Length: 282
Image (cartoon, rainbow, N blue to C red; front, side, top):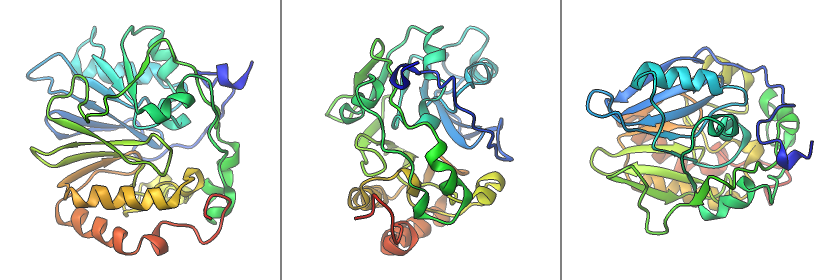
């Protein structure tokens, strides 16, 4: 099978899983964070008030049934999202999207600059094992980096920052980790869905990933290709002064711990986030 057509990642083998896998938490009544192995996906919608909701990212490969079961427990047996919003197209964020779209005839939205990777036209650069001594970084060249083709469903997000089916939320272009990476922010309660613009676990370390040790960190190093843009994106998000952040990896962080940690990350980005060497560093 042509890799760009392997939209279901059928040949991938990714045995990693964290202690948080299969656990969901409502960080506020209408924002539900669910951990699929080592990555988070988010449901936005309050089941006590509405049957309508949006799914942010679609987890790891081969998790479609698990994701559907999670949705059914939260919103009812026949529930399907109004739409899927993708923070970006790396395999751990779109892993189950093709399988889900076999059953769901719904729109998918992503930033215009991410579309080449979601329409089978481009592959992502492979993971760089030299950015960190952690085992996840060392394994990263084995991770799938090919594009997928969901062109029948995917369409670009509006350039005005509005997010379909998510009133009150704003889409913020936060490139660096990928060209079309986005984050989502709701000013009303200052909630941030950050994707991988920054994360709350040291994603390069297998031990910390498995144990979900909480610490603020820059975007996963092995996949980040533009460090200058990544720094500007973190600065942009810190300037929003979020009160709660749900990130693509790690447990949600809030309050003073979030604001202090995020400010520290901005001030010490080169030491904390940017690798000393690697093929995407210079």
